[in-house]
Image 1: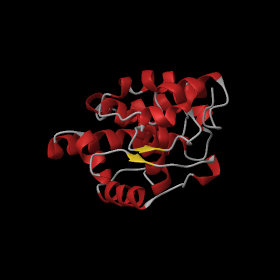
Image 2: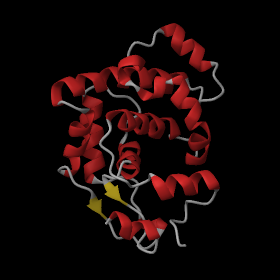
Image 3: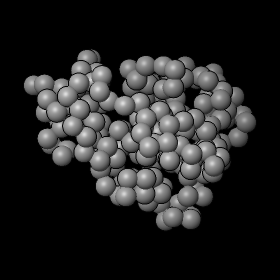
Length: 185
């Protein structure tokens, strides 16, 4: 079975085969992926996958209503939690982003509605033949990043936003030889 070249260990294969590129419209999952993609900045995705269960435990299964209420003492506790990336800025950004997700839910009805507007509510079907062809950012991720930053979101540069778009199926970036490409087309 041919997969995208980056899926090279058991955790990555599982994520690739079942989740990456699958359109998601669940606000908690979208918040989780925003958090994990931001946490990954400067690190490998394998590191984040290994710590994913720790993140789910540490951040109340990514319920933005609960995370939005985290206090400075929660942040201090998490800075000492080896089950996640102990980067104070990334931890604080998750709390801030949770508060802002709640604002978007109030304004747009859901975080999903807000995010998916950047692709007109549809998955962009790319046809990359090699992993090296995948872009790090696009005009859509640039727009998403600019809009999220204007609202106060943290760790949402264009590269992070594009990785989010790939993760939640806003784009199908499986290479054309990968068995998942046609399944998600």
